[in-house]
Image 1: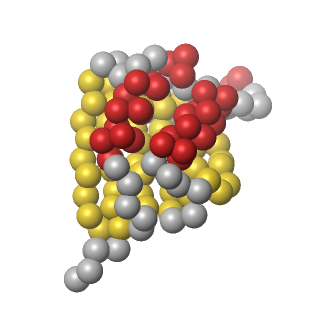
Image 2: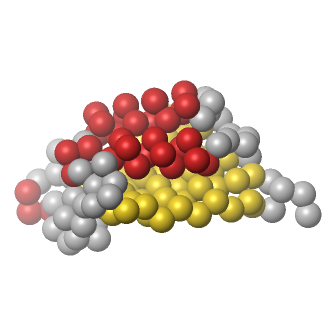
Length: 123
């Protein structure tokens, strides 16, 4: 089978929760897409902004900010979890990109002290 695309999976721990805001994540996507030469499309957030206090997420596995940055060739998905100081990212594209550049930039942006990266080919 011919390769369809590539996916970089990042599990980052010991991150700085101050970088988990909509503004910071928006700027992260902007700069990342320039670095890996991807064309940005729609950006969507899921978080507790504008949610009544009693309806806000409190579990360590759900409290935080999630976002999907659609790119012309697929998407970049992020889950930033405040209480766990963790960021989980999936970058999937049928257009090649340099996973090392994306990983290094992500680790630096979020201040990650520990990162597990997997780069896979999709067929």
